[in-house]
Length: 408
Image (cartoon, rainbow, N blue to C red):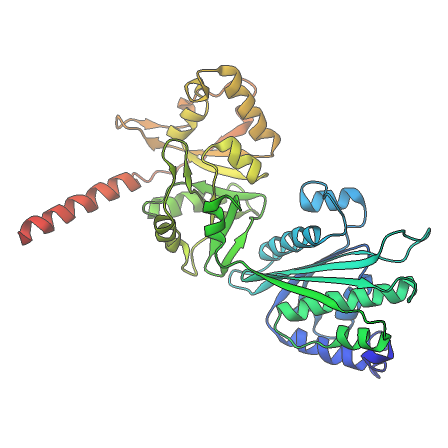
């Protein structure tokens, strides 16, 4: 370990080179959530022991137990120590960082998963996978350690430096700690790295490679936070009625992050074009706008699978359709099964009153909610905004025709 530098005079827990690097890290604006499993336990101590850690660290979690890992990822990973698991953990950490930080804050999720020296000894290799997930890209790291060269504590030290390396790279801070450590060991070890661009996440959604993409003024991410207040719509165009309804609904779910939700697919018409998706998404890029969660799922039971724990904000006209067997192949049983599945994913509905096509005001009181599912629906009280995207498009079309007629 001498290759990483002598112990700091002011901090015996880190070397002088480590302290210098971590001070630079704390001086940059990026904040992080860190998940480590199977090793790298010393990394958090190194970062937290250098003054200024609150500038960098939002949260550190060690999902060591099987159930802890499942809770973080939503399902059990095929392999606990792999590039995919590091990626999935880093993405979960990033989503948590978004949730914990202020809008516009530059955040990153960092994860390390390891198989290190143990008792009884492992048959397989001793290895570490790390990932750093930001709104821009994902950096991947793979390190195989020379078996038998180090004690468990020494291997954990190397894994911890890998974690620091991932965090500094994501924060655009130069770090040579791991390179010095591996060079000093003289075992010919090296880190294999690669980078994956996330800029065209919307393209991945349209091709089916992704199912959920969140877009905001701070960037684009693949996946979305759980437990949101979501106002679904086509947003063609976005208008003040949407904004005011989401704001009113958010008051009924304090503590949950509000967002819009837009499906790029239609059950009857298929997916909308990339040009049209980009045009609609652009409406949410101002700094004062809630994010928009884009999905490829037009049905609410599918949205619930993708976005568990969410509260969907809908109009009474939509609520009427959700509980009509007509929309479930004329099967009441299929309708009941769909509602039960939506509830099983921890989702619910907030229902706002709305004018129907006949010009009659409808509210939750007019919705024939099946017995046993009353708790799935809650009214948004005292809200009325008689405006729709259809009316705006019709008005815009009429104005265009008038202008065209005047010019002819």
